[in-house]
Amino acid sequence: MLPHRSSEIQDRFRGFLFRSLDELMAERLAMDAEAVVLNLFHRTAIHVPAYRAFLDARGIAPETVVSFADFQRLPLINKPNYIHVYPLAERCRNGRLTECDRVAVSSGSTGRPTFWPRSAVDELEIALRFEQIFRDSFRAHQRSTLAVICFALGNWVGGLYTTSCAWHLAAKGYPLMVATPGNKKEEIFRVIQELSPSFEQTVLLGYPPFVKDVVDAGLIAGIEWQRYRVNMVFAGEVFSEEWRSLLGERVGSKAPCYDSASLYGTADAGVLGNETPLSIAIRRFLADHPKAARELFGESRLPTLVQYDPISRFFEVHEETLIVSGDNGVPLVRYHIADKGGLVAYHEMRDFLRDWGVASLTDYGLDESLSYRPLPFVYVFGRADFTVSFYGANIYPENVAVGLERPDIMAWVTGKFVLETKESADGNKYLSVTVELLPGATADDEKCRIIAESVKAQLLRLNSEFANYTPPDKQLPQVTLRPFEDPEYFPAGVKHRYTRR
Image 1 (cartoon, helix red, strand yellow):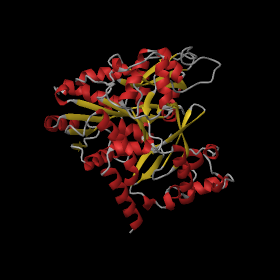
Image 2 (cartoon, one colour):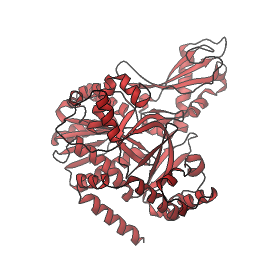
Image 3 (cartoon, helix red, strand yellow):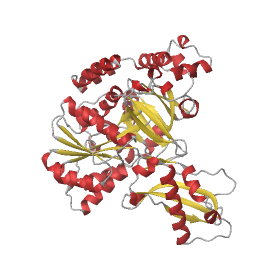
Image 4 (cartoon, rainbow, N blue to C red):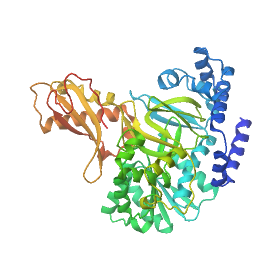
């Protein structure tokens, strides 16, 4: 038995269940985030054997780290220098897996899984992010709500993590029922048709392209989405505001800032931030003003823009990529998550909007009569390590390369390719692989079919996220064959990039 764990869990659950979101967030906004993350460092150095060993190997004495400036000089940890070096148990508190009671799995680039243990207590931090969405956006404390989990179920982080956090909200008193059909459309439709009429609103939670597939297939199946006051929670993909509007129209949404929200999360550290009505309204303004977006983000394309709680997940920026620190089953201190992005303080965002002449965001769907939490913003373009994200699965070039390395295929191609996610005219995402032909080789439909089937087979074999997240009818990539040294995709004399966004 572990009596200390039982006591801690009871105390933390009482703190979550019996205190309002407003009270909890006001307390956090009054805290010194730099002092909190410095305390996390010292607790991790004391209680996590792997982190102590990591510091010892670099000649760092924890007691010399006394200021936030000292903290900022600590070396970054990542998968190669930390996660793949030290045994799993040693990365947990007190060097024991039994400090945790559940585990999530993410795929590595070679198909080797990475395990991320956590405890019920760790989930309470993430449940606050869901509570922000369900209360501040969906008014779920006032409306009976059916939450339909459309993420893949199993060890992968999305489904059960989301389910558990939604259960925590129900335990807190929200009039909320949680249904778990997973990513099975027929089961989702069964749940909607049988249960949604009994609730004031229905929330679909899943990866954006899959939720769109559900909505479109539901329309064909005769589901009248507008009857059910549908809200949506997304994770795992960057999407456009045009896409949000398109999907909202199909379910009868009339309030884009309040009827959907996207989470920024990873298997490594849980949910790191969430869209709010304010962040969505700002993003919709930026979608209409690409020059403003370019000034704010350095690019005219729109990243995911969310607000975050620095007491829960503390962000820093290193060479235009994000670093996060946060307590979890595997505590992370200055963990490099390899996502390209940046930070904007709340007051900086307000000043930026004022400088662009934005006195009000009501034209972009924000109800200015309501108050909004002054949380900082983090923006995310996506992975900076050459992966692409498709239905929430990280697709690695290495997985695709294996599909091209069959002897019969290598008789036609150089081995170079470009991996992309593209969008059809109807807004449906698909996986695109553009392949370079050998000199003198010609393209035909049969070659494209053979390559597509081979790539799909290797993705299913090597990448468990792809196999479990991506619907079967979306797993076959669309292959295009281009001539040798094609100037658009395979220009001569430059370093080749295997992904494109």
